[in-house]
Image 1 (cartoon, rainbow, N blue to C red):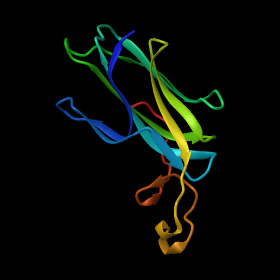
Image 2: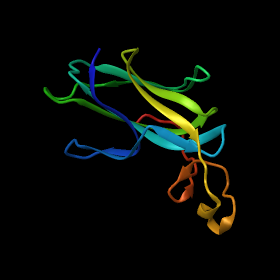
Image 3: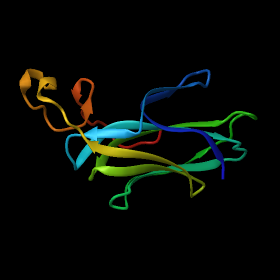
Image 4: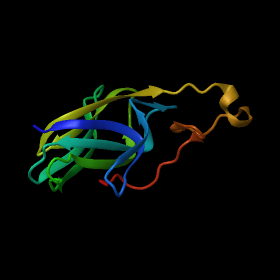
Length: 158
């Protein structure tokens, strides 16, 4: 099984022209006001060492409390990087349906087998009245720095 030099969840990520991965908002917890709820987006970033042949990589998001797969991204074939370099991948998950609070995980599948688990927790957000604009409740949804976030676009492999 390949060795991972990086496997994280982030709000945003890019791979620059020079091959550097830039991550914004690495997290292990998602705060929601209620469930069920569709979460707008996050990115799975990974670097895999010693990939010397074309490799199929897929993603599963699993609710551990319900023992249920919430989303599956079919495997895509990645070509080996240049000798001595890690295989880099970013997968953007969009409109992910969370049904329960509690423990979840992202599974990175390498050639059909689980290569890495990335655990995270979905927790209930507590928003004090003083943080609500005008003292009014905002529409239910994920809590971001500027208030509720809105979903857009389908789940896709980037």
